[in-house]
Length: 188
Ligand code: SF4
Image 1 (cartoon, rainbow, N blue to C red):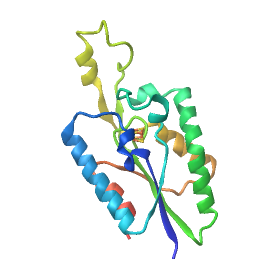
Image 2 (cartoon, rainbow, N blue to C red; image 1 turned 180 degrees about the horizontal axis):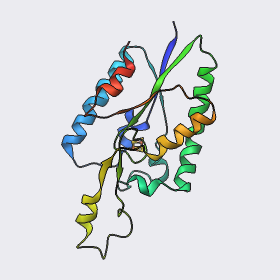
Image 3 (tube, rainbow, N blue to C red; image 1 turned 180 degrees about the vertical axis):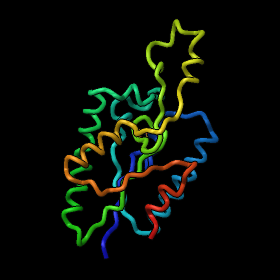
């Protein structure tokens, strides 16, 4: 029987890499789905490859939450490309042995400016020094929202997969409001 494999965003297995979050209700819903997803994958004998976290490996654990516009630059994209090389190489090697392995897909994290697949967060005025903007800070915070678009790591991942001719790998995401997107991927 073939070994089934999924590739996941780093924090799907290691939430210590995430930006510190304060919205407990959102965190609980995501955490609940994360546990269900991992349990289902493990129970079904599916192997898990963990991508690197592009934000932790650039900014560490004390970073602020970002929006995708901040990461939409050549430096962040190059960083994503670099940390994806070992992942792409592993996918290629498993694909080179199709009698033994099956790549089921890739799972990102909706809402993330990096790993969002169907949704990322956007905020056009989310930049600069906070001091001196006292009266506008809350306007800027409220300007941040979810939008239907991919995060930057996922964009670079798609490009890297295309360059290698890997066009048939489904990419989906963990999103508490649409749990079946990720759970269906690890069905038996
Ligand atoms: S950048 Fe991706 S892997 Fe890192 S914490 Fe955000 S969603 Fe998770």
